[in-house]
Amino acid sequence: MITHVLFDFDGTLVNSIDRIIEEVDQIIQKHSPNSRINKKIRDYIPNLTSFQNIVALVNSDFNLSLNLDEYAEKIGHDSRINLKLMPGVEKLVQHLYKNNIPMAVATGAGSVNYNLGVSNFPEFFAKHFSHSVCAYDDPDVKNRKPAPDCYLIACQRFAKPPSDMKNVLIFEDSFTGLKGAIASGGKTVYVSKFDRPSDQRELLDKTDLDIETLDQFKPEDFGLPPYEQ
Image 1 (tube, one colour):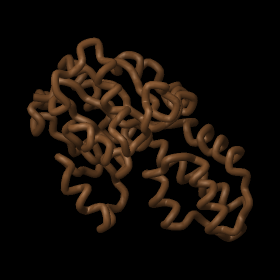
Image 2 (cartoon, one colour; image 1 turned 120 degrees about the vertical axis):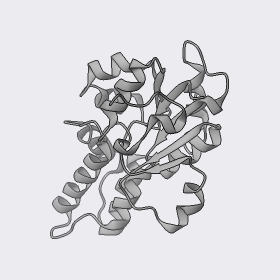
Image 3 (tube, one colour; image 1 turned 60 degrees about the vertical axis):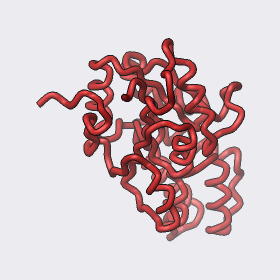
């Protein structure tokens, strides 16, 4: 029985992954005329572990020398302006809230970028989510994704923690996050519109559900109350 739900933030709840791709593409066009973002970088972004790594990849692929910290900060900031909720998020979150299912956010992002993203929807997050864990700079998170730490700590911080991780449902959009979610012992849903490369097939076979958008999610498949007709 599912008693608690955790969501990743970037790409799961909000469209910041699309915005990061847009920002990186603009940087490439500006500094490497007649060039556009390539598939390797586009595929890497949903599974990024730091913005510095993106800039380093851009430098390598386009023979540039962009300052890692400067452009990482720019991408992190600009990609969190004018965000939108991902398809199906509002319906699902409101449904879980209405049915008294506690929810929290477990993100690999830092608190500054996370709070900037949340500022696009202050009432929505304040009302529906108990708390958030930002693995990048949370002092209690010793190991970031793909380690399970942030999910376990997020569960510990509920007013009434789950009795078992088997009672926790975790939504993730990246392979990095999915590895950690599975390792935590929770039930997992992988939700992404991006390609499923063959080298991730073994990982995807371990998830409880693989969908492209949250519009496809059926709460009753996990023992949760169904949507009202």
